[in-house]
Image (cartoon, rainbow, N blue to C red):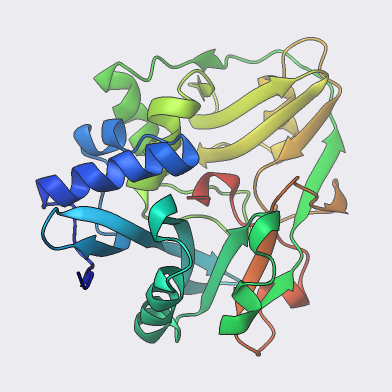
Length: 290
């Protein structure tokens, strides 16, 4: 049996179902609710090697087209993710074939990057990837009165309110995720559905989560008429003393910039030319990870 390369599986029910099954098996990750709610768009492109007789996905590596902006210039970044192979087909070079095909199609993009776990750190340099460093931004914060309330993300009206704010992007971000509603809802309709807050006063939505005395503000969208520090203060519940951003702030002066240190995760960037990861302390939006 010779596997067949398939790049468009969204409208192929049998192959799509096999892709869902393999993602659950390898990553304990369910793409099916995201698909059924209509959030899978053309920006997410699985490259699958398929058994043509059984319509099984034997291996996959996905392309995520991330539109962003840096110093006034609109850019297309390509994030490679969901790299997986059925256990009984590992060691046959399938991941290599898929990566080579992706790089032929997308290697000339403004930036191609991926996040690797510790078991494959020697694999990606074979394709021209090199390690790079991301940074995180933290600051002290004092809770102040505000009108942020949690949105019910199962309610169509709440989703529409989030969409309206998202269309204005993140006014505080130097490297925002643009025009990727589907990827945002991968998080906000499932994993972070209880972490979406709206302020009518500030005309802004923030996706945030408390961990101890730290508020993790993953992203903000809308047209707020205040500084980011003020917004964080109004968003923070009592007992919060620190805020950590999930994006690169335009004004980093109030923040402490620290190297990101996520367990079992290493950033790799493709190509020899210096990317913004080498020339500036930046962080890709946390909600762009896929």
